[in-house]
Length: 143
Image (tube, rainbow, N blue to C red):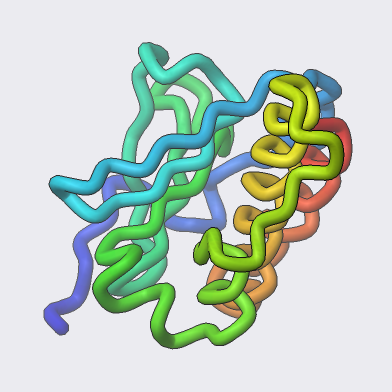
């Protein structure tokens, strides 16, 4: 793969926003057409810049202050998920169980599954993500 030209050095990106992110609203999005998974700690309409760390994983940051506000994984189902057995199990619905079959239980189960998938991604690519991985995990704890 060709070297990725980044607009800023990875070391210039900040984690203050993630460190102070005590909100429960996290935006998860999977785009089947582009095969891209996104995790955002800001509303999806907020302007972000994609900062690739490798072929698959990118950090999303705000352009004005370089604050990390999300994570993006490209080639998610086609390439990324098959590389990690634990993530394959999380992503697959065959083992998905809802306790009482109420709409509320379904909602809680889906939210829990999203967090598990996000944590699985962070764990799988912790070495590539580096220090921000810790802040992503802490921020997800508030979800």
